[in-house]
Image 1 (cartoon, rainbow, N blue to C red):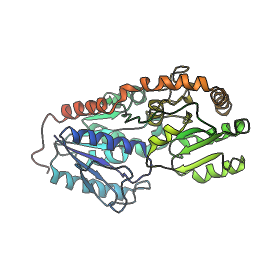
Image 2: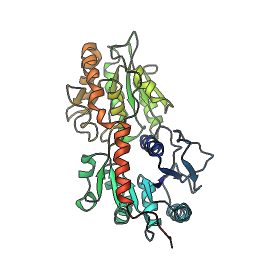
Image 3: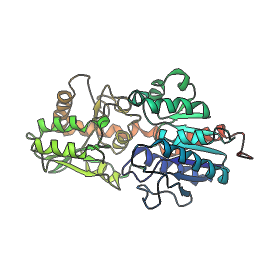
Image 4: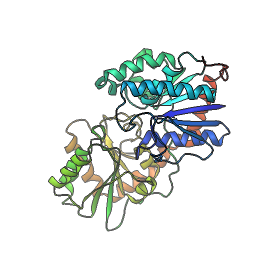
Length: 372
């Protein structure tokens, strides 16, 4: 089957959805499918995650992919996508995330190439972005199906959109070496995520500031990049935590971060799937998250593989959870040991099979003969 995947850019450092895309298209290519990947940036901006060498790679060189797209940029992308698809003549095309599937659906609205839209966020996100919500509603009827990454995400959408959706989770790839929750003389409290309001690392730093003096052997390490870097660095200085809180940015080998940590904490207000949490659990790390955080509360099973902080005062609740697990190494070991088995259903082979079945079902009409 000839498949085209489209994403806005792979140059974003540390993007979770971008990493998921590379795993899925690599898995499909290894199964013999003819896979092409298109993005809107430039080959001068290298992909942060490696793309399988058997996959054809194209760039549209259209606009600033690190900023919110203008109307002119979207129109140019619609035209560019249409021309490329006409040349490639695929059986099916997949747009990964809103910024890709909207122009893809509009570009192919008069063709016979089926389009799959891959959505990676809760519908609540669109309440703050009415133009994006409108674009979603326009694009949705033009798509054969829309994928989301959990049933809870699908249930957050209005019924008319929900009926067009299939839930396919993100794959959790290659755990590698397991973590040691006990640790040695120095211990790491790990957070992985974009430095963004949704991830709420400010609450995490505030909570850590309340316990740091009692446990001088612990370091908080926040791996990721984003627009709140200066804000978080300022907060670290204000709390006198220089040297106790590390902000290394995005890293190339995230597995090494999980393996070196003793405790994982996800401070997000909401998640679509919680890929970092799933990866931490796969590495045998006990995890802390918030009970009211969609995408986290489905992965962390309270008192089984981690701790869920009850709804209420977020800083105080997280402080209490940190005190309990930073103090009790035996409890960290017990919770960490349960982690891998709770995420085994998200293996790469299983998720690629889910994608393969959906693609085959939606492409049953075969390749297009003509794109007018």
